[in-house]
Image (cartoon, rainbow, N blue to C red):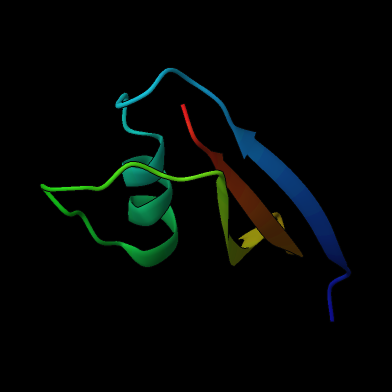
Length: 64
């Protein structure tokens, strides 16, 4: 069994540029044409396989 690693990613950017849409698409494979603004900070997690190593990503989505 491959080692499991953890990585934290912080999404930063101006308001209404698509940070939440990008996170939703990557983590949940969904797209919503209409979004509400993020209040404070939200996060999602996803585990991916990179060259045989399981990596747990924690993606923090900040308000613009």
